[in-house]
Length: 66
Image 1 (cartoon, one colour):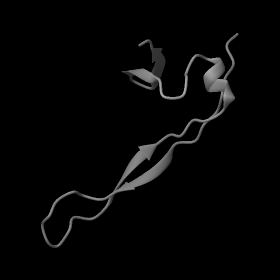
Image 2 (cartoon, rainbow, N blue to C red):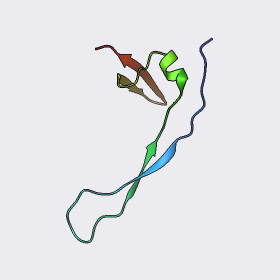
Image 3 (cartoon, one colour):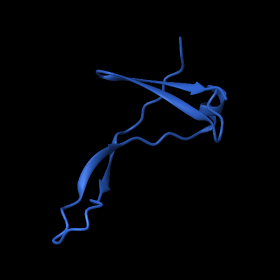
Image 4 (cartoon, helix red, strand yellow):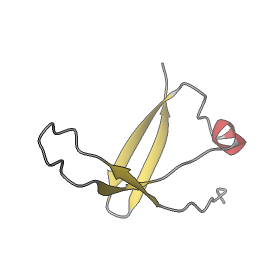
């Protein structure tokens, strides 16, 4: 069985890049942070690229070669 990790979806406040006045309000977007040696053990190297496959209720992360 594959090792599992439990992460928390946080919020990130994004401000608008619009130059208008008054400025549009900040909006919240979902944010997930992953860190740890387990990423390298799974093939995710520092500076490497990642392919993200998006499916309903599921994200599949795959390290890209090259």
